[in-house]
Length: 418
Ligand SMILES: Cc1cc2nc3c(=O)[nH]c(=O)nc-3n(C[C@H](O)[C@H](O)[C@H](O)COP(=O)(O)OP(=O)(O)OC[C@H]3O[C@@H](n4cnc5c(N)ncnc54)[C@H](O)[C@@H]3O)c2cc1C
Ligand code: SF4
Ligand code: SF4
Image: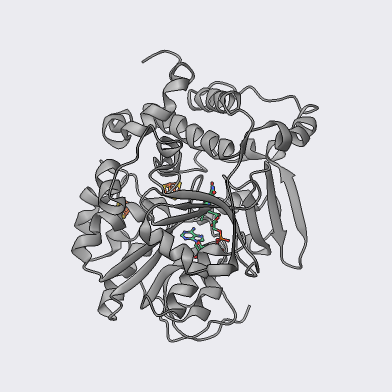
C-alpha cells in the first residue's frame, strides 16, 4: 500500500488523500475506568470528563431538552425506545456512494454542508495508515476529503480531541459525525466551546470493541485482518463480509463462531452503553429499523435541514414493522444472564441452526420491531452486566428510560430478584 503525503502530521490508510484532510498528533489518553477514549481526556479540558462522560452520571432528560427543546415523551409511539424525534424513514441514496457502509447518506450530508459553505469543516474519522479497521479522527475542509472517511471501522476514535484544534484553526462552524458516546460529552461541552454553529450527524452504535481485539474476530475469516474490507450485521440476520479482490461472504448470525471469542472481547463500556440510538444527534442514520434500507431519525429542525440538503438525491419511504420481539428478547437476555453468571448457555442444536437461519428473516422481528428488540436487548444487557461487574454504578449510570425498557424482562434479567 503506497500512502501519499499530505500536509497532515498524521498519515492515513488511503493511497490517495485529497487536499483538506488534517489530523494532528494527539496526546496520550488519561487513565479512566469506564472509557471509550472519546478524546476529551486528551484535550485541554481533560478534567471535564467527570461532568461530561456518558459513563459517570448521565442526564439525558436535561440534554434532550437542551438539544431538541424537549425530553422524550414516553407516551409518543417509539420515543421511549428511540428518543425524541420529528419523523422516521426508510431511506437510500438514488446513487449509492462507493465505499460507504450502506448507501452513504451520512457522508453525503457532510459533503453537502461543505459544498453549500454552511460549515467550515467536518470532524469525523478515517483509517490509520497501518490498520484499515483503526479509526483516526480527522478534520475535513473539502467535500472530496470525505471519500476517505466512508465506511465503518470497529474501534474507538478520540474524535473530541480535535475540537480545540478545530477552533484554533478558525473553524467556528463545525459538523461532527459522532457515535453516541462521543455525542454525549460533545453536547455537555457545546455551550462552553463556543462554536458559532455545531451540527451533529449521528449513527447508532452497539457492540463496539477496540481494534486490536476486533482482529480476533476477523481472523476467523482471513489470515490478515486488513484483507477484510467490509463487515455489516444486517437486519435480515446475516453478517456480510467483503474481502480484498472482491470476494463476498454472507453468514447467518446463528452460525457465527461467537462462542470462540474471549470473554472480554466486548469491553464493559459497550456491554453497558445506555444510548444505542444516539439520542443527542440532530439526525441519525442507521440500518436496524430500515428493512434492508437505511433508517433515518430526524430529531429536530436542524436535522430536518440537514436532510433537506440532499433534495432529490434521497429516496424516502415510510418505516414498517412486522413480527413480535418478546420471545427473541427474552431468549437473548436469558442467555446473556446465564453467561454473565458463569452458567452454561442453552444453545440451539447444530442440526437446527441452518433451518432457523433460513426462517429468521421471515419469522423474526423486522423493521421497527427489530430496532425495538435490539434496544430492549441492550437495556437488559446493561443491567445484567452492571449488576455483575460494577453494581455501585447501577444507580448513577442507568437512566430511568433504560430501566423502563427492561422492566418487562425483570425476572429474566435478575432471576434471584437481588
Ligand atoms: C461500531 C459501530 C457499530 C454500529 N452499530 C450499528 C447498529 O447496531 N445498528 C445500526 O443501525 N447502525 C449501526 N452502526 C451504523 C452503521 O454501521 C452505518 O455507519 C450507518 O448506517 C451509516 O451508513 P452510511 O452508508 O450512511 O455511512 P457512510 O456514508 O459510510 O459514513 C459512515 C461514517 O461513520 C464514520 N465512522 C465509521 N466508523 C467509525 C467509528 N468506529 N467511530 C466513529 N465514526 C466512525 C465514518 O468516518 C463515516 O463518516 C454502527 C456503526 C459503528 C461504527
Ligand atoms: S468523557 Fe471520553 S475520555 Fe473522558 S472518561 Fe468518558 S469516554 Fe473517556
Ligand atoms: S457501544 Fe456505546 S459505548 Fe461502545 S462505542 Fe458504541 S456508543 Fe460508545
